[in-house]
Length: 441
Image (tube, rainbow, N blue to C red; front, side, top):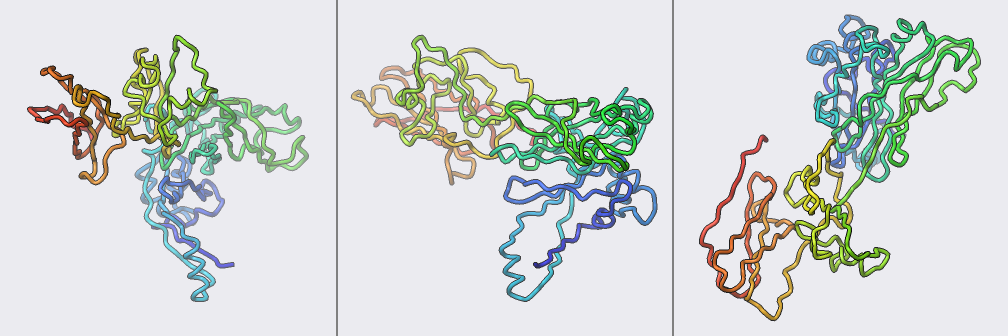
């Protein structure tokens, strides 16, 4: 079997793989959302303090560069890119190599991409070097550098669970009679991680759970969050160094006492909620077909959702092409606006049927009586055009003061607008105006 060795950027590889003190970080790996892999190394406040002390076990990069810049903790990201194993195998076979040494790219400090639901950066973790029992400063408890990683179904996202074990808290405030832990669970998607709720703390176990033993010699190794329906269950992984027999084997996973977090994941194209006068049985294929186009994809239901039943439903949520994803919370239906308490984030890819194209409306016997005009746009110099096409009536014959308006067209760096008229009538553009606002980017 060939051996592949990678050298860490700068001096990050020195002593990181030696389990001594706080220098045991070997990192974790997650997809970058672009077909590649990110290698993460979490350095806690304890890592920074341990490496600040000169000695043979100190990592020179953490000691001289990362630590001074982030003394209370840092998430280091190494973008490894796509690892082409077929190409590596061919290289080994072609030239008789039995080992290959490569150099990883330079690292970056990634604290800004580990946030809570309000967008506030969470790393460095503010509750390190604080007692769980009373929140006061003290002790040397920190979050472990090896979080639990759990994939979320078919979404491509992951749950990342960081565990802070209250060893200092147990010794100082509880006489080693019980142990409290704190867990932070993040939802990771394509290089960005959003914390689910607030950090969760609670009693993980008490000395009475294992009669005759004190808390000190053993503790949690890490925590793993599992998705079950709309909840996340947090489990701990116990490890111990004391001799003797436990009621359960050392290393057994158990469910901690602080339990579950509310959690929901959904991928929606349009959300249509109506209360029609007559019952619409969606087990009937013809009724389901009201929401589908000829190709079986999602049909464009108009800007307010009225295209299906003839009236706008109370709730119709959608995102027009080019609009920010947060616009999904803007109710286009008749029921009024919503108050958003969390964050809306884009899915890793479009769900099936979420892309639609509205064709030119079929002509009727009154061609030219009420001509229609269509607006679409291109954000790449007229190379491709938006799938969303917005139709407006130009007014019936003899209606000379019709004003056409298109609102909430989203944002773009440079945009080309295109107008098309369906009917064989004279088209004279007398004047138009565009309201824009300068963005922050």
